[in-house]
Amino acid sequence: MDLDIRLDFVETAPDLVELTGILTEYYAQILERLMAVGGPRFSVSEHVDASIAEIDQFLPPNGAIVLARDRSGFLLGCAFVRMLDADRAELKRLYVRDLARGMGLGRKLIEMRIDKAREMGAKTVYSDTVRGNSSMLALYDRLGFSETPIYDGDGNAPTLAPYLVFRKLELDSPGE
Image (cartoon, rainbow, N blue to C red):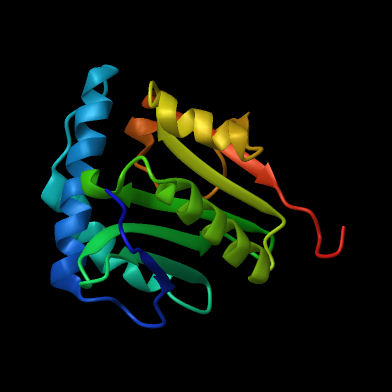
């Protein structure tokens, strides 16, 4: 199946009902993956509520949210980025619905957030994923990310750290 997908950064908070729906799917998947590697159970709804409560951290001028939609406007995926400080950005909450998987959308969402982080002044981009998430780790590797210890400003609960893999990408300056 070939989808006509539109990718756009939002300037203001997106529809919170729609965002709640896709973040619920995202956190349910994270919980499943986390428990598969021996991690703790957490409340999906509490994580969704916390994400919605901190949405401003991921909006301009210090962050960005990119949404992927099909021709009808159905939300297929989302991805967040925020500046941790003047030189460092963090990629968060990449999710692509099953309908749109296998088309390179995840890669495109990562690349768009890297470009946005560079525009916002980042010299280093950080991310994390659950241990054992081989497809995401392979994608990060292909994009030039390397493994790194947990980074200052990581937005996860400390109890999750043993079950996560942390990645970083050093960005070239424009023109290099």
